[in-house]
Image 1: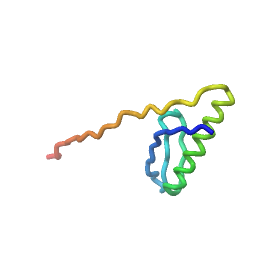
Image 2: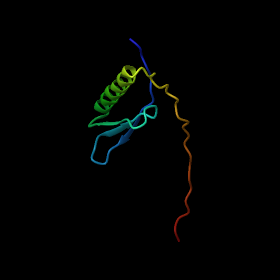
Image 3: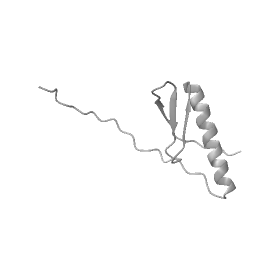
Image 4: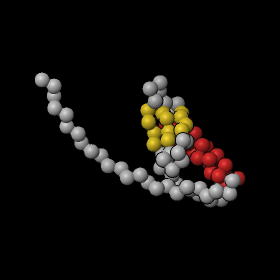
Amino acid sequence: MAEYRYTVIFEPAEEGGYVVKCPAFPGLVTEGDTLEEARAMAEDAIRGYIESLRKDHLPAPSDKDPMKEEIRVRVPESA
C-alpha cells in the first residue's frame, strides 16, 4: 500500500464547519462540520482522486508545499 502526504488548507465556513482545499489537486474542495470530519472528508477525496488517476494510468501529483510567508500590512487610520 502506497502512502502519500499532502498539504491541506482548512478555512472556517461562514455557515459553520470547515472548507478544505488541497493545492496539489486543483479543483478538489470538500468540507466537514467539525475539523475531524473535514480531515476525514479530505482524506477520502484525495484517496478517490488518486484512485481515479491510477485508473487512467496517471501518476499521483507530488505535494509541492506552497511557499508560505506571513506579511504585516500597515494601513493608516482614516482622518
